[in-house]
Image (cartoon, rainbow, N blue to C red):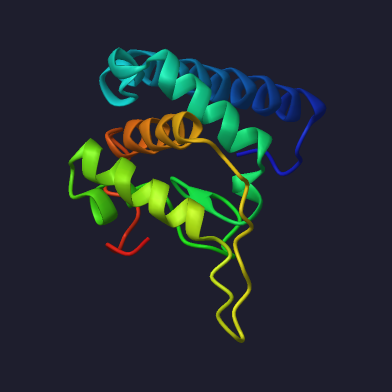
Length: 148
């Protein structure tokens, strides 16, 4: 090997590395777009789920809660709350959500409170449908524990 590192050698390493990592990027992009339809639960996307997501965003739920690992860690992870509190039954989960949302704030001393957003029953049902939708996505067994 040569004792000196030339500009030509540096240029070849730069261009070769750029092409190599660009090809890796393209292959990972292709793989992701191929896998997503099987994992993202899009066949169950309904108007109710879309309204629930809009409520989630409008009320800044992600400011305190995390969903599938994204968001704040101040309040519990809600990616599996449908399974934890509804047992996989949408009617039971909607009943739980109505009771929980209408009982807020709980006024427990020494504990920060979830505000009462004064949502009507339809809005709570839409939010429950959105959380059911996220619980049924293939997220590689996230969260790592049952209680979020």
